[in-house]
Image 1 (cartoon, rainbow, N blue to C red):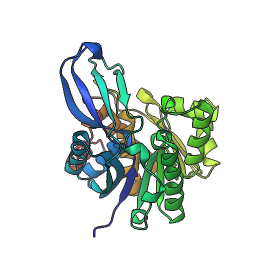
Image 2 (spheres, rainbow, N blue to C red; image 1 turned 30 degrees about the horizontal axis):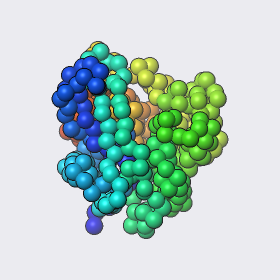
Image 3 (cartoon, rainbow, N blue to C red; image 1 turned 30 degrees about the vertical axis):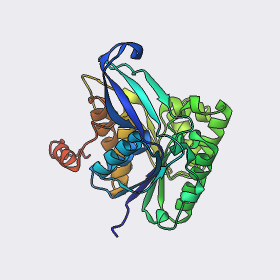
Image 4 (cartoon, helix red, strand yellow; image 1 turned 90 degrees about the horizontal axis):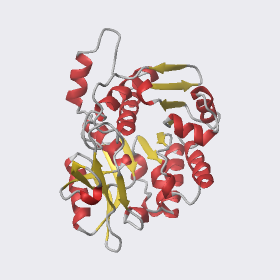
Length: 320
């Protein structure tokens, strides 16, 4: 059995994307795709050649079959995806935008199959992966998902694996803001690399400046904190270094959804390939810039061939 480089877990939903602009109530034609921040990152890493294992649940329904087939086509190892005969596959509607603004999204995921993930999914084989990527979304889905997130991150860290964590705040899924902040910060304390957005970091820590936000998580045990600054680029801080890394200019923003997931793909892949933090963040900025120039949540994520072509055109001293 080949070595698993990365384990990720969460909910992949079916997504019905409007074929034309306008209010969702007036749209008559939709295109079927998949959506989910956790699986976006898993797919992005698989496209770059990593052996990625995916832990999830889908319903015993047509949308579940569609989700599973799509993930397998993208190269994910789905042996840890259970088929739930009692609960449906979650799905969402997404509007079409042409001006780079955030699309309208309506979720239908409460009580979904993935929300019934639980700690029983943790096995010795699952823990053999070299790296774990987690987000705060899973913990927001249900109490059992929250327990799974805490135990899986703790077990991987105890086993000497590296762990990355993107807060990916979804306030509407939490019972209260205070619970969200407390649990997300407790999960971040179990990660080596913490990747919040600037507004997320401000809400979670109470600090405004990226340096102070990063210090908050470094004091909890993180090795590095990488903060997304949108069109301004990103900032990273470790115990020994800190720096701002400028964004890759984008002339035409098409769809902002998935930009943070693309950034995570770049940073995680770079660090797993033993790049320095500045170089890994550079790659994250580049992949994030690709994501916003493509319609869809993960359609802009590059292949290894795309990455090699980009690297070949980098100026001397630049890396990706």
